[in-house]
Length: 196
Image (cartoon, rainbow, N blue to C red):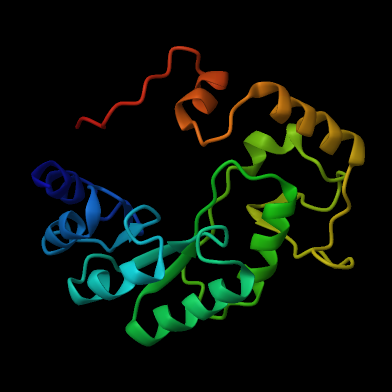
């Protein structure tokens, strides 16, 4: 907590918000008391039951939603209304998603009037492995247009889907492994807590 308070002071005037500088709602609340900027999270408030203690303790000021965690597109819109009612700013977080997920995120983002901050996505790093046909989700000047076709507006590349499905079956991995994922890009990557 003390290190996070120090980092927050050092980054005053640099960031729109400081994302997850420490663990847990209680830790975030302690940092928020002294931080000169809002605190955001996509780690300690990821379910409906986390909202009440986070709001009561003023632990966060920006909630980074993820439609995968919060129950889909409709529930994400409901979450946006709750955030608006309690004065929490709103943004969206993503992890290693592909085009179907980005299309869904784009649609729900367009349907939320109180999206206060830019959404983040890791899609540009994963787009070469996508399972949708190219051309719909193109980034221009940091923006993606909402797809206009039927459904989510993207079309499956069935060959790519079959190839990735085969990779999944052959891998034997059945649970999330962020360290293994990072090692694909940086072989010597080790999960460590940050040091300032």
